[in-house]
Amino acid sequence: MGSAETQLTGDHVAELRKTHYNATVTWFERLNDSLLRMRVRLDDGVSDTGPALHYDAGQYTTLGMGYWEPRVEGAQAETLNEKMLQKVVKRAYSISSRLLDDDGKVVPAGDEQELEFYVALVLQADKPPALTPRLFGLKKGDRLHMGPRAKGAFTMSGLKPTDNLILAATGTGEAPHNAMLSNLLASGHLGKIACVTCVRYRDDLGYTEEHRKLEAAYDNYRYIPLTTREPENRDKDHPDYVGVTYVQDLLRADDVADRLGFELHAPDTHVFLCGNPAMIGIPRKLDHPDGRYPEPVGVVEVLEGKGFKADEPKVPGNIHYEKYW
Image (cartoon, rainbow, N blue to C red; front, top):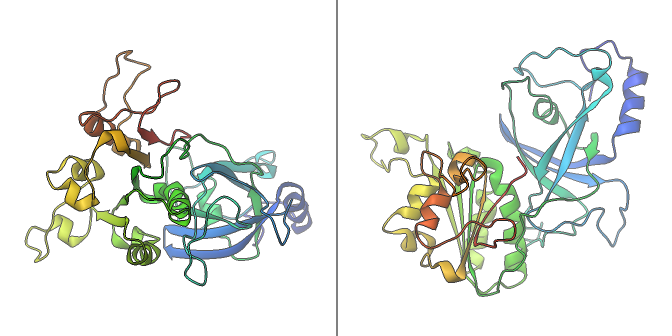
């Protein structure tokens, strides 16, 4: 990585990296102009026999880079003073999974020496995006910061081996579900599993090849990708026109059991949600003690209408959603 568009000298930048960075990029793939998968190896604790960082599937850690690093072209302009130039910007990212190793076998999540992350590029926002325009400039062998501990309660604790699961996400919200799926399949989970991911375009589905291989190998697994902006979603004259189906539309449709491969039966089904809060539809408990669903309708409202219950502190339920945003 070259030095940033700053007055810092090369020696100063090298010293800052040495001081603040504790991990190395071991694999990096840009899937399209705004989507990447990468693997990162933490320095401390690395050995030939054990992981550098243990995590439970569904948890997250932080990635960080210095403000002194360059950003990719097209990023919203930012103004940095001398003090800010020497700081590191950090953000939380769910830990994903490569799903399959080089031999085509499922990789159990939690103890890998290299952690995989699934990242979308943000170029414009209310505040100039600081981290992803820098992450997208990385390559194999580059250095960065990675949090040395995993955090988060978005995990599969309490599941029965026979429970059915829906892993529903938008965009890169698929990441923690990949880790969950890896562990479920590697452990011989007996219940049925459906992974639903909604994106704008097909090339925003970063793990399609792996999911299709898993479908072929496991009778109890089904992958259901949804797109919203392909020609067949928008053009009614398209020969393959299907319209737009969001996650909540799929779950309230009459043919939902056929799509998922199992009945939406609350007593033996758990649903995990990650991604756009509008998809999840979290009731605004703080503003309304009795709970009020947001508009438009989200998955929580759809499922609670079918007998499911959102998981809350001290009140366990079977709808689980990531809360770190």
